[in-house]
Image (cartoon, rainbow, N blue to C red):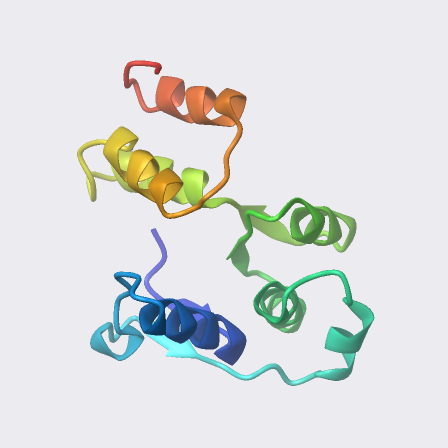
Amino acid sequence: MSKSVIVPPAVIDELEQGKRQGEDVPNIQDYSWIWVQKVKVPDFLKLITDLGLGEAEVLTLALEEPNSLIVLDERLARRIAELRGLKFTGTAGVLLKAKQQGYIISISPILEQLLKLGFRISNRVKNDILKLAGEPLE
C-alpha cells in the first residue's frame, strides 16, 4: 500500500456532500497520510465534460504526477486513464491489495457494505476479486 494518498479538492467536496446526506464518511484531516492537492492545469478539466469533477481532477493530478497509481471505478474515467497511459486500479483492487498485505481480514463484508451504499460492481468482477482473495464466491 502507498505511504501517502493525494486527493484533489473535488473528491473532498464529494465526501463532505456524502457526510451532509448522512453517510458515514471519514474526516480526511484525521489521516496524516492523506494530502489534499489542487490541480495545476485546470484547463484540462474543461476537456473532460462527461465525468464528474472528482474523477476529472483525479485524472488531471495523475497527469501532473506521472508515476501515480490512481483509483478509478467509473468506466469512462478508466478508459481515459488507459488512453493517457496512466496506472490505475479500482476500489476492489485496493481491497484485494489491503487483504494481501494484512490490513484487512476479509473483502466480502466490505464489498457488501459498499454495495448497500450504492457502489456498483459487476458480479463477474466481484467473483474474480473474491477468488483472488481466496474467499468463497457468492
